[in-house]
Image: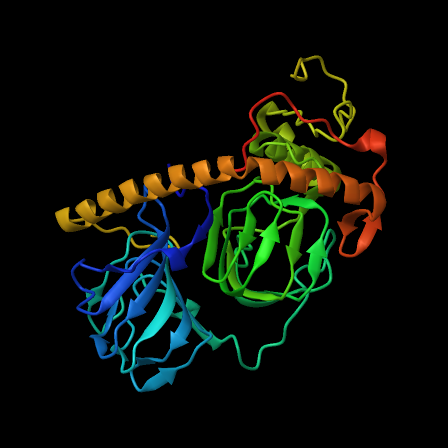
Length: 308
Length: 86
């Protein structure tokens, strides 16, 4: 099942659960926001009680953490709200503590939460990928996309993690007061968001308030969009976020996926042709906005597989 | 080993925890599907308003560039069940 489509979910309506798995010690509580039922990868909101302590150690999973509230200490350094960490698998972190308690978003990207007590990196650890930054201080807001189609004015972000190979991103974003955008969007990637503060609205799901969350698989319609008083949120994608805009409220994920391929065929014909002609794997994707548009010419004889 | 994780064995404690979380996640998914089904009358109204707005104020083609959608371009609702959660 992997991660199911969780949208919308408001964590403020739920109680924290005690983390009972070995290695995490006493004083760690969590709300599961989304969970990959195959791998155990997950996103949690976690509360560390005041006085929480953990020895040095690593996880077998890549971990991302965003400090929502309170302060947290690693080694001798105290980190404030808005701090973001990317901890590659097997990288040993110094002893962790929180004297007054704190709340974080905690993401295990490869497998279930785990903790191995040690002050030595795993043999496979890639420490060069470790990153930490305070996203609230000293980073400029930027427009989300340079290449069209872009979101409307009033949506800005700070990129915290960018994978040069997959184009996956983690980012802080804001929607300005009175933001609106009258189109329906979907992407070729999964998308995730947690509302740190503020309420935004989407035509499919209604209001997403403070503490609101979604994990949305690829090709699922969302929007039109509106935000009355502004929103600040933490977001992630698992590959490139490309905006496919349209105005058909009733298209489904399968149709959107096929439309994406059709659009790729027009947007990047060279790469599409390379993919399509390999072993004569020759799909003819349909765009529900252009049902009669075959898109390219060729001179061989086969069934184009158009839907009857 | 990939960027996301280092392979490792899961003990019985971890397997039991995952089983519990899997059940909870499936239950939450079903609840969300129901809540979203219950939202259908409101959503139908929001969609009708949206289809009206894009014919008057326009559709966001790129950023703030708007295009007025012609009545003949407005899609018709298919007969199949309309889902927003997949």
